[in-house]
Image (cartoon, rainbow, N blue to C red; front, side, top):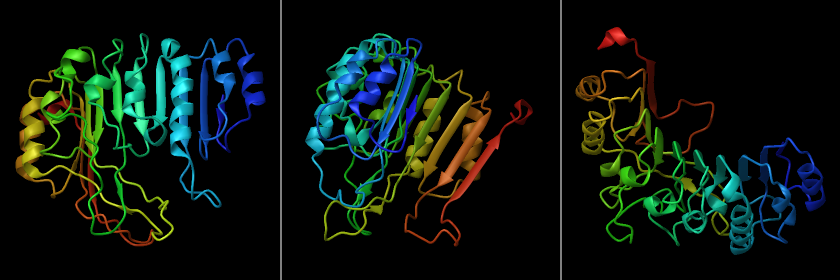
Length: 305
């Protein structure tokens, strides 16, 4: 069941929870503040959950109580975490600390989108440490900031300042698909923790145009952290250990070079899908004009290597 026009009422969710075979629920709300929806505790057969927030602020909702949102979503996940197999959720309404506080014995797929909150960070390895069945981890977070010449606040997945000494391959030994967005190097050490068992690897630089909650700022300009050339080659070196890797996507701050593609070919002989996206320039341009990025996507035949 999917709700996409706004937050459903508690009564509507209660009615939906009476469907005995309902195992999937997806809700896209404008915001998640206000009274908690007690109906979430009645979904005893739910296996797949999606909680999303619309582009904000909407008309008349420039100011909102984000702490209320975070606490509400935290309460919903506390009830549903033990039974979920798949979770898709906006980072705007779910901090990594919320994932840490729950046990996820059956969760096989976690996708976070939207914008990561940066003020109460936890190491990614700590956030997923209680997800022993996880096979897919996609952190598709965008990086907003308040001006065209400012860098966005960095969302650090792993750093020496984080308390967790455990590395990602040790926490998720069966991980098959990993997506990371806006990795801020050299502050972030997550690129040196890529598991050898990956089949799919995306290191992206997602961005989004969102209106600012500050009345003096009309728009949050999109800025992002694509990969530098040394970091791209560092990832390619790591992929040489990934014997099952068939899909690789990288967002670069330089135009793809022959040397890089040759290095990828040598490191990943079983690769089937390769996407190299040039994302250095992020100025906003009208949709009618050309896009200032180059995307090279190709499905590779086995004979190429």
